[in-house]
Amino acid sequence: MIASSSQYCLSRNVALALGPALVALLLVASGSDGFPAASPEDAPLPPNELMFAEEDYEDEEANILRERLQSEYGMSLFGVPDNQTGQRVTEWQDGTGINPEELGEYVEGDILFPPSRNGIRLQSARWPGGVIPYYLSPGFTGYDLQNFQRAINSYHSLTCLRFVPYSGRESDYLVITNDNTGCWSAVGRTGGPQQLNLQSPGCTTLVGTIEHELMHAAGFLHEQNRWERDRYVTVHWQNIQSGREANFRPASRESTDDYGIAYDYGSVMHYSANAFSKNGQPTITPKAAGVELLGQRRGFSQGDVEKINRMYKHVCARRSAAPKSPKSPQH
Image: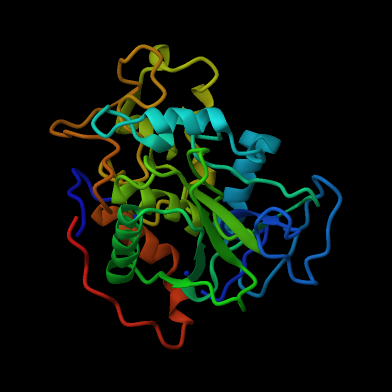
């Protein structure tokens, strides 16, 4: 079921390196951190060494996105999961006017590329075939798993992306954990085992929060950081927590690809009105009349669905036999 939105806003066997699609960071796991060991070809690199690779299929938006993240955030993209964020999410309750992923100390609240002790490799990639293998760590409750499956069902019924359980054979896959460090994900396919955290409860309470983090993993950034956003919303800088102003910086026009989708107030990738507020007053308000809610997490907007399908159109088209789409869940 697609969440209502005031305005509508939202590819496969393609590995896009720093010169094509979505930023990502290769975690070279040693096996001692709870992750399966990296494959032999994932040779350890010196800390902070950046590797550049080119593939047959190039996509200019990937290069643009990589440059934007690097230029705006630099090494702050890479960090260690934070227990203080986890404490805030533990205390969070639905109905407080903000979303749990807006409580993080990470870039824009929930974007994190955790480096392994063996170093990092920065590359850009979409998920081959639009297929995203995942491994769910133990410890999620039945309620968590139910909401997770509802999110997956929405992806399968509404988009061309397919999430499949990790079989032990895939080299690139999500490791979905429920550590007490908040809601966070890297952006795009990073190569190797890639952690995405959904703290329970909090990050698993609303289906849209799960969809939000999975969209980051698929390669999407936040809606309110689009270059033209000032036409649609007002940012109240005086109400933003000190040090969090960068979370509200718009991208440059050159670094934005909206896939022809209009600005989407109802996107699951949009901040709530009170995100990162220091005084309980709104930090972002719509300019359009009749917009009742920013930052909804009931489920995908129509724009989210369209954007996913447009980004992955060529990638998914290369998948020879897509799995049968299940029925859309009822949010």
